[in-house]
Length: 287
Image 1 (cartoon, helix red, strand yellow):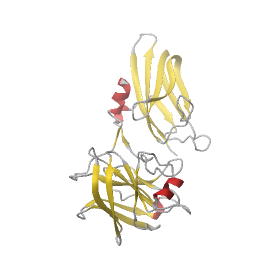
Image 2: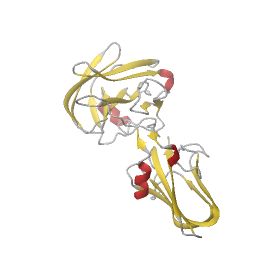
Image 3: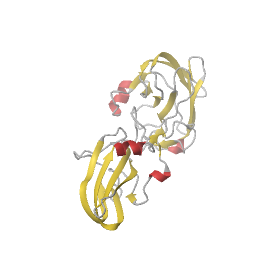
Image 4: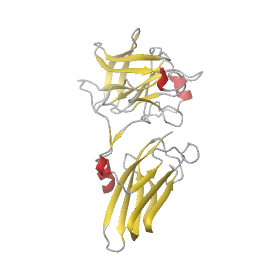
């Protein structure tokens, strides 16, 4: 765990608070061109420590505005706005800790549109602009960085989740901040990102490490961002100069892990002089 804590010093999510007195609500994800039979929806993110209780907001495009009330939202909760929440639950796997609100929302144009999130006093809390060319039909647009405006392809990216959306979940394209000198130049991971559901050659990643001395012991562990060990690739095993693993994105029980960022920590012990050092990096699982 001490190695994981050290890594997370450099691998933190870009979640920066907005300076709004009562809430820090932001637009997180939109579905503007759903497949036939599926609804449009807008996802918000309560990017704050305090809860939101009994507050009214509005979501609008340049023409129409619709009010909705958040009776209670916990800190760091995802909030999904849709006209028919029963329908949205039938077509998407939405976590039970997400908040669904039945409300009218602006009809989002397929060729591009703007959205405005406002409080009850019509103060703009957040805005979003998209071009319809930025994603394809049935693929949501997700915000990659909550500290930057949601108005460009650099920060509104098509979902790379397995079902092409992360409705009520952490965005699959969410960026992490990694200090450059914290990443090992000796620990090679390719491809990265990779997808367990991808085509052959891209559905697993190669983890490789080379040392100048002939023999070393290695413990290699992959964690999730909560600090929980998800895969143990090596436990004090002996290697000759080169370590190599192939990871298919599964945990210790053989289950596929969700889209996300996974810290990898490699502890190396030189069998000749007994010295130990640690290599750290990140592996990204995509759609």
